[in-house]
Length: 520
Ligand code: SGN
Ligand code: CA
Image 1 (cartoon, rainbow, N blue to C red):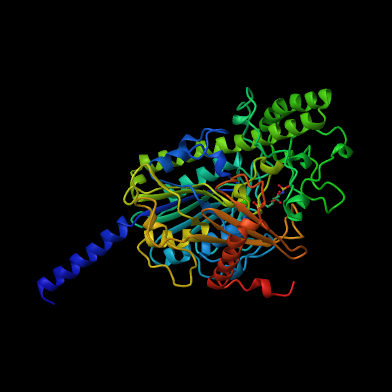
Image 2 (spheres, rainbow, N blue to C red):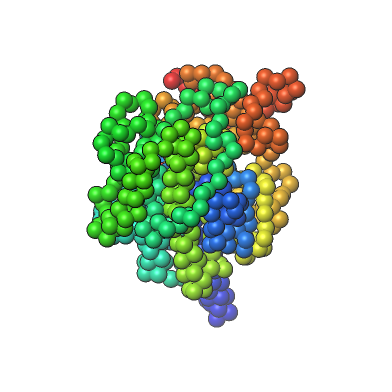
């Protein structure tokens, strides 16, 4: 080899190495059940979340981000594979994830990324495709959680949201090999039921009442049996487990807790046995007086419903306050290490959540509060501060987007689309004009929400509840954003319905959803 040829080889190797080290990093923060309304970048009524907002304000805020099947395990499986539930096999929380299938962290890893998964996993089988993983068991615990680190279980003293963030920072600081781009999943348990806040946040919102949604006392008139027969009313929450009363007698538990199909309440009180003495003292000092006042005053009727809503929403928001603090901690760490600007930071939730709309908590329904999720992305190389998008974005899109960010062409069998074309000004020609949804967990599991599928466009939403019912709902979101008026069957919407039914068929065939033809 001539000296010139040798030099050229050397230069090209060096070039490859530089390209290697400057490939962007990925920090994917996902919370559990974080409703869009509880992020102040979307709505300032409930809570101020400056750190989560920062990601969107210095990047892009997606105003129409949707989940394709609004429940935890399924949403996570879609996110990892870029494929709908009927393709990736994880349809409801009874499923087991087939970890041998293609996922985007696996592809990143094969292409030289260091991959790590910290926090809530909830896919039953062990994580695959990660250099390092340390995950909560099943739903995980808020206090002093047990976590499985690459097969070994240990208890971590402290509050889960802090611990998961500590472990993420520790992984970036100590475990990650330098000179290799990384992709880290930071998956919080919070703000999942049963909303046990950190002792540090008990004081929040004590001085004010949180506004109740206008639809709280909904009577479901004109809606399907599915809307009327669900078991997810705040009014039916467990007094002990959910609302933190110290029950004087287990028989005082009157709530169904989302399990009306079983005759006994399953959970009587929050898991206080895990708390250490200091945590327990703080817990009792905060919740005892609330409990005592309740038994003294014995609110009834509307006053009782309002009391339950305040108890629920305040604990829920306190869990988010802790998430927001910890997002701030993570951003500060990245900033201090000079990593922030070559890292794509994503903030999202595994689905939305009802915060009293229609009187409900939980998710599952294709209605807006559970269909939508917060989605904020910061990535200075490609996104200018203050960008917004109203395009229909899906959790199905995460896998192809993050592969493309890493310079990898997404495999053709992924069903989502890369969001990158939207990064510039929130719009791009030829973007999807409708999205397809399919929910399966019924009648087993929790909350009794009937199986359904449907389509949402910018303006309309058509839903079909099937299995042990056969009912349709149509919402004109431009006139009825709160989805109180089912206009299915009204003459003037006949053509809209016809078009949307054809669109459902088109989407079912495009995404190969043959599950409706299966025997029950
Ligand atoms: C738990 C909750 C349910 C919730 C499911 C699924 N009950 O079982 O209210 O719908 O999780 O949530 S609890 O008493 O155990 O808190 S998901 O986000 O994991 O899909
Ligand atoms: Ca969830």
